[in-house]
Length: 219
Image (cartoon, rainbow, N blue to C red; front, side, top):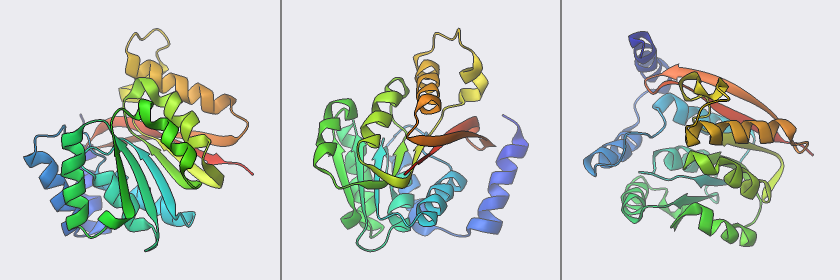
């Protein structure tokens, strides 16, 4: 990883983002609990907030809660009556996230559905439409999460899929990595889907070289 990427992230946090005690506590709790260090960066979390606010989002669905950092970024961007529904496979991760979100004062806006998201997708049938979907769970199932989210997305909503560039490996059609193939599958599905207009934003930073798929749901 190029040290300049991390240096710029640090500068952005200081110059643009400012102090975030609640976010720091969520990340610290995640580390203390020994959860994987795979949460979005602070700059990426701020991007989620900016995108949510830009479309006036009131409801969001997330696949992959982990310690609750991205969940926090989404929940804070919603109005007081807003709601985030988030899927987390690991009960221990969900417990860490729940405690952190409650401490941050947004727990009442968050519903955590525990268990394999692929098995719990049927619960979306009972949800009101969502304005934003953030997919950051097991990569081989990206297309399944995308299709499930699309059953409940409103026109003008946005779908975001994390980690689709995978250090450039997404361009390798011969890759046998299931995560790469999952990224390619969701990119190609979005490219062929007349319901959306999408693009990929390549990113560098403290999390290395990766990227986000962004798709707007058309009328």
